[in-house]
Amino acid sequence: MKISERALGMETSPIRKLAPYAEAAKQKGKKIYHLNIGQPDIATSPKFMEAIRKFDQKVVAYGNSQGDPNLIKAIQKYYDDWGMHYETKNIYITNGGSEALEMAVFSLCDPGDEILVFEPYYANYTTFAKLGTAKITAVPTSAEDGYRLPDQATVEKYINDKTRAILLTNPGNPTGVVYNKQEMDMIAEVIKKYNIALISDEVYREFVYDGTYTSFGTYKELEQNLILVDSVSKRYSACGARIGCIITKNTELCAQFMKLCQARLCAPAVEQVGAAALYDTPASYLEEVNKEYKKRRDTIAAGLAKIPGLVSSQPKGAFYVMVKFPVDDAEKFAIWMLQDFDMNGETVMIAPGNGFYATPGKGVDEARLAYVLNCEDLEKAMALLAEAVKQYPGRKI
Image (cartoon, one colour):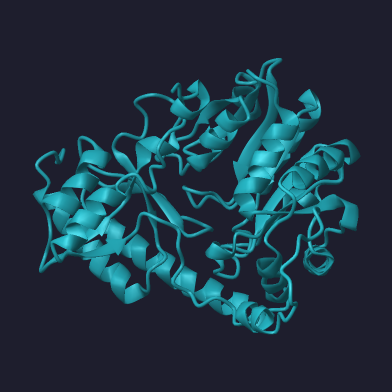
């Protein structure tokens, strides 16, 4: 039996690829502090389960392909509160932000077309592009510059007649960067100049710790080129609900999204009921969550600052930080921490950085850390990490 080249070309998630090593470590009795995956330990808003418990339909039937009307109305109100109005016809419910990204790629790209990203970038963007027979073109940024975007002239060097879209996360995963007005204006100018799409993944919108947040949805001139990707996963700590949405005011794109929604029949009916209720969560919930993550951001930053030779920038949003370690290979270091290292039966798991790059050889000494643990556990994890760097045979200092 022949396996398709498309499937063989997919890459293992850098976030999950070391799971077998973690399981083996746990079998040996080690406690692992998971900094490798963005799974919050924040309690999901109780609105979700309250709504599901009240769900009393005798048949869990197919739903509307576009999405539950109540959920779409809730999302409309949410965006109105952010100063962005979308009609019902502009919003399509998806199986998490992941399906939204797949729909965007499928609707924009033919085989061989290109999507421009800024590396390091969320690793699954490569998978979504390959599923859509497209290619990722990566524009480099650097840890030393805080992963800020390059100037317009540099960005334009990576655009050609095969470029169909710029795809970015704001706030950033894995960098924690929140783009400033100058960077956003530059992106808007490039989009208009070349008449390509902007796929703006804004699932971490509520998690900004320094300054305010601006959505690309507020750029009137981008109305026909913008695709917004959103999700309840991180906002309400409901990752397993797998409910997201894709939004655009481009009528032609809307027609393509509807075809794809119909092809998969519908998003999960019961989860949509819970998700609709999540949008009724009091603002105080998000305010408290934001404060908690800011404390965690400051905690991990303080711990990283004590590790000699380590380079990291202060993340402004989301709950990730990209770190350059003084080691020969961050993946080898990560495996070593799981297999050979512990302090009092405890160790740390990180996500190797090479999987967040498209350029071969880049990110080898980097890793993404997710500060999703409580501050006490983060302090313990930082102490473990500092000791691991000291003991690692492949350290560079």
